Length: 234
Length: 385
Ligand SMILES: Nc1ncnc2c1ncn2[C@@H]1O[C@H](COP(=O)(O)OP(=O)(O)OP(=O)(O)O)[C@@H](O)[C@H]1O
Ligand SMILES: [Mg+2]
Image 1 (cartoon, chains in turn orange, cyan):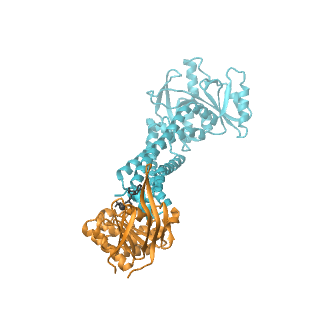
Image 2: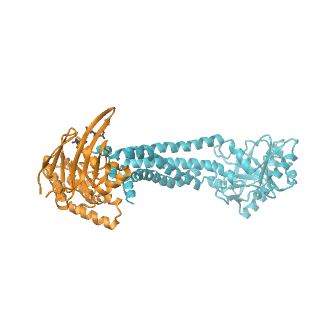
Image 3: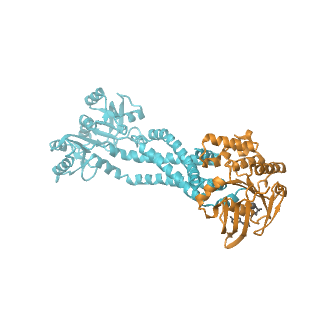
């Protein structure tokens, strides 16, 4: 079954960075659709602009030209505060280095994005418990990040990313800092989120093993997006 | 609520750094508090002065005397209720470093002129009976362990000889700011001795203290007194007590200004210390702030975290500093009692402590906050790892 409803539409997006007086082009006229429920793995050599593209889709960086629509909203047209609100409601993030807040417990870290919603304390608690149960960490609620292994921290980060039930889940090398066994657990989790809950996932990875779980792989090279490899079609 | 939790935990993250910064704030608050108290104590004597009390002195200089004969003339001037007089004695008690103010006065009228000093009636009566009697302030008596009946010997500097007094009374200030370190005795005793030992020095007093009948006519009385001694051998200058005390203080004005300046330098230094800590802190947390921004937290919440942490440090230091100011001011006041009769930390000083610590906390956070907000999210995230 292939869903053909594009949830992310990237149209002629270019992006370059300024390094001193030099302008470094990173993305060059990228146009691509990402369908609802898709699990996309974005691969490519280091410095090819994978993170940059992911950040643009997630609304934490700005395009130079072109536009990006997510679920019908043109995020490239939003001002900073609108964009922050939009991120809070529509995007879940998973990073290579987990990026948990060290002074907050696992529970509090997952609760953090819910503080920006209208949920009551009780409702928040319920959501957090469900999210942490989904990543098999119900027994680690009161632990601080420093008391958790890398794999466990990344699972907390995934729970934090999905607790608001976002439209898209973006992950930048989520297994990049993990040993093989933990990496597999994380990939199984992502796979489950995609297959069972139908989450749209966009993941940057270097790890071919991780990419195997995705069913679309795209290669980014020198600012240009190459053809699609379909695999694992359900 | 949540933000408060985060910023408290953040503040405690670098325990040594936070502790040192807080200690810095405590020391600054202490220094500031003590310096301000020195200043307020100085000016308090102005506040304490009574509005209907006039001081008449030699118009040439405060240290030149006036003839005692002026007393009766002043009393007859319209609007005057009573006249007393006071003469600086300036003797040495055992050793020169034991400084305290000593005055030769007319005890009956003097005690009437200063109702803010309370002497138990039986002591007052004993004082009036004994020509060689003396009265000391409570603090002064405490300092030297004097008891009623003790003989106190002063070595004269202005007035030659050795002078013996018997302590007949100990007065207490009825107000917190009252000076309890003064020593006074019978001018008659001084004068009669001078008649025998130092011809030419007798029948003179330092200043007259004039109480007016009412408050409205104070300026009129001032003019009438000074006019009646125009073109006499010793012209007078009469001032209200406030003006008199201010005139005295103006002599030490430069020192007070210096102290005032130093008290603000202390604040500037502590601002630099707290600002430095906050700059280091915020730089370390750029990544965390980027995460919060990624999750959708707005700039004002990030600002809240940084300002909050800065305030936690400065206000914590301020609270502890204020707590310590009182006992240390007591110790300081006891040690410096001879110079500062009533060394009390005023509420105003405490308010200034609180206000400045809040201002320091806010100022210290401005630049770090501006940096944190300005750093683009993606750029901030790149700093992690
Ligand atoms: N904020 C920035 N300022 C300047 N240059 C940047 C910035 N972000 C990215 N770049 C540059 O843009 C290019 C692409 O960076 P990007 O992080 O997107 O690559 P990547 O494909 O994710 O690489 P990696 O696999 O190493 O993570 C690199 O040359 C990088 O140096
Ligand atoms: Mg990258």
